[in-house]
Amino acid sequence: MSYSDLLGGDVMKSTMRENLVPKMPQIEMPKNTDHQLLIIGNGFDISCGLRSRFSDFFEGRILKLEAADNLEGDELVKFCADKHLTVWDLILASRHAIPGGYMKANWCDVESAIAAAVLDLDYDRDEINPKYEAVTAYSISEYLYRLAREGKKDEPKREQGFGAPNFDLFEMAVPPLESFSGDVRKTASYLRAAYPSEEWDKQLVLQTRLAELHKLENEFRTYMAEAVNENEEYCEKSFNLLSQLIDYGISLEKETIKETTVLDFNYTTPPVPSGIKSKVVDFYNVHGKIDSEIVFGIDGTGHMDDFESIQFTKTYRLLGLRSVRSPRPIAYGKDSFVRMGKTETVAIKFFGHSLSSADYSYFQSVFDIVGLYDSDVKLYFFFRNYADGVEDEMFMRVTSLLSAYGETMENKDHGKNLVHKLILEGRLAVVSI
Image (cartoon, rainbow, N blue to C red; front, side, top):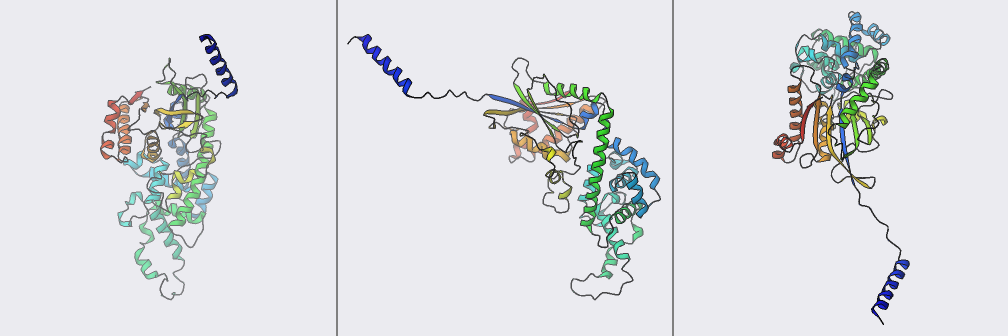
């Protein structure tokens, strides 16, 4: 047998084997799909010419309340109902009236007002600054509690037994009505007339304030919808600004970033740009949208086990909102596999957000997901340099945010040098646009 015959036989056997044994499909290894997260706040809408500040919303409402200076009780309730006002308008009006200082500058910060009203419940009355009484649930509930007992003074003395209320001790513990400020009396008068009860306590005060907060949210949602409809340039300006933010830092040649998620702290939804380098754009409105529901609240960090304050936290409130649920995760770590391909967040961008502590829990969760310390994720903090000192203020806010995150890290040494590490590795940029 010749060599060629032997070769031919082997070739034939090989061919038969290929025909008899099914071929394994070719499996293409998943390619990386780089992802970026863009976080925008109210500064985005303001930059697009939208009157979306709380102060814009409350300005006219405070003017309406000036006509109610001498009203209390049922008359005040009727007036507020006719003008679509709530007890929170009364509270904010009292903050507005305080001369100078922190409260004056932030009188219209409704989330700060909620925090002051809800988180001061454990203060002793002697520790409450009289100027701030109007924004504490403690002082108002105390006032209502006393009012509820005023009508029982003429009742026969109850038998003093175990568990029976000792009204003599009560009179000693609760200060006289006239010791409360006019703002407290006015706010309490509204609540008592709008929600009649003879058993006022702190929890009932919180429940009625929550009901009033729902009313305020609906009023702001209506206001924002009208503001968008009346602003003919908002659509175009928001489109252009969003495109600029998304495209910043994406390589023209490599087109590395294929997907973008927009974590939107506003109640608006700018039009999604088309033809941009980032191929997929998902929107996630954190606190709801003007075409459905919106939420005001305080940060849930440290309050999720507090029965009295949990109902005012954003985390608790958001559980019931379907409109804020995202079709996909908003951030991906190195080991995230999505749709048979590996997706990794490589950049996080911020614009128009105050970076306030009220939303730290969101940012800390995102940083945890991407493993900020040991990853290659880059952070971009954009700002508009519209006045002297804006850049320095931005540096302070960024440092505060990252320092606060560093304190949550298990390795405290890593937490202390986080900012330095990001700078040295070229992963932190504060950019004027």
